[in-house]
Structure formats: structure tokens, C-alpha cells
Image 1: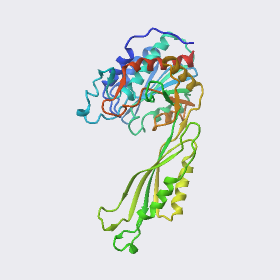
Image 2: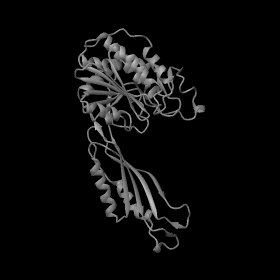
Image 3: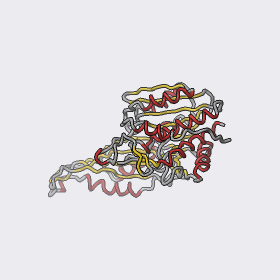
Image 4: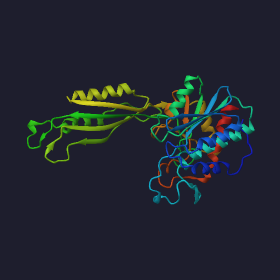
Length: 383
């Protein structure tokens, strides 16, 4: 059942502009969440501000029954870069050539505004809907992500609040609103490898041991290794070197150490322990003397086709005529934290071509369809 509630013209765009004007460079929320709470409370939401370090988080819930459908996102934005490079002030929302410009326009203040207005429309038309609706908003997605969504998820888990579905408003569309949604993300794991050698004069290599020469065959083997074949939803796991540091800067000294930074982007077809063990086995097979430190930035998560992806896909089709593509491409997001307490997590939002760039923007014509898709998804799930 799908309703046709009365819509207030320009409501989503106006709220988007209001949020863009708040210069919430990570981790500063600049009052964005306070404004959201002011809008949600009259709709029957219980709003909690969760402070952790310098980070402000908002948990808001309407209703106590299951299923609990949650909208998630972040009010923080990345720094602007040189202000002189922007055509207009990044924190003064500006309309130009059918586009709304400003930092956060695409990532992701339009999504947040669209979610709020979608809920306003939905609850007005269906005050007695089944289940519950939640908002999980942080100001620590663009930063270290240690005091944001993960803190709220830990709080919800500790008190037994069960999330059933979550839509994260990350900008996932490629060419047109709705052409791609993310039903998972790859994990990220970095390694810092320090290979030991013996420093010496470059004219007397027999008295030294060059770690660059020693590690080169191992790097070639690591680069050529097939870590897995991926699966229905994921491309194969990739391994890439990001930095190599060695030598003193002088041209007549064999270095005593070389340090190599590398990164895995891995699918659910591999595990952290399995990848680490295989790397060590390759390094050991080359007889290297080394230290290796690991940093796991995020585990992969996957939402197979199910009620949430069906509800969102049908909403996109009804609103835009587009049959959306499910994808796990791209970097990490806060979805990785939410997936630990929620069985279905899908990311969907505006076109991502201008995110983090100078003159970030969104097509004005895409704003209301985004809001309508969020509302239609609620109708599909909670009516």
C-alpha cells in the first residue's frame, strides 16, 4: 500500500540549505543535530544526545515495537580546501545552473534532510504505522570514527535495542539518483612492514645487506597472489602497496631498513587471520628479517537480497523508473559498525561525483525524488 501525502514544496531543499549553512567540519556538529531533534521531537521521537570526546551523536526513536527501521548518517563534513578555489562560499548554499552548491550538499546533508522530511510525511499520513522508526546520526564519520556511530551501536547493544533494517544515506548513485545502492562494503586492513638489513657503503655490498633487494621478490609475489575469487557480491580481495621508505637520502649508502605500507581491501571470501597468515608465510619463505604491524580499519559486511533491498529497490523503481544495481564497491562507511547490531544495512543516497571536491553539489531535481524514495521505502516496510 502506497499513500500520496500532501507535500510541502521545497521543504527538503530548505532544510538541506539550513544544514549546509552550519559549518560542521569534522568532528564539530555545529548544532545540526540539535536542529534535527527540534524537528523530530514533535513527531513523537525520543531524542538522546550522546557525547563522546569531541563528538556529538544523536539517537532518536519513535515507537517501541518491531521492526525498527533506522535512518543513519553524519552531520560532519570534510574540510573545504582552499576557499579561493570555490566558486561560491562552501557554507553559503548557492543555487546555480540547476544545482545546489555547498560543502555537504552530496555528502550527506541532503540525505539527512530528505530522511527527516520523508518521516514527517510518512508519520503524518500514517500515525498508527506498525513497528518503529529511528535516527542514528553522528559527527565522526569523516574523522577517526572512534567516538561516533560505533559508540551509539555499543550503547544500543548494551541495552538490548534491536535494529531490524538500516538505511545509511551515503552518496551511492553514479549517474542518476537511484542507479546504485550499496548492500555491503569491503573490509580494510593495513600493514606496516619493516624489513631489516645491514647499512653499509654502497661500494662494499659484501659488507652490507640491502633490504630493498631482499624484499623485492617478496613484494612481487604478494602483488601476484590471488587472495580469493570474490563471490556473488564482491570483487576479489586486492592487495596494494601505498608507500615505500628506505635509505638516508645519500647516494652512496646501502640502507639498513626499508619500510613498506600496504593495504588489503577484502571481501567476505577472506578473513583477517587468514590474510595475515598468508602474508607472513610469503615473507618467511623469502628468509626476511622483519617486523610487521597490522591495523584493521573495518570488517566487510554484506546484506544479501531480502526485505530491505526489495523495499528500497521497488521504491526507486516506482519513483524513477530505474532498476537499481546492488554493489559493494567503494571505501568503508559507518555501515560496518551498524552491521554488527543490525541484520540488514543498505546505503543509498545522491550522486557521488562531487563528494569531497571543490564546488560540491547536488542536482536540485534529485532532491525531492530522494525524499520520496525514502518515504516509499518506509511505506513498503511499515504498512
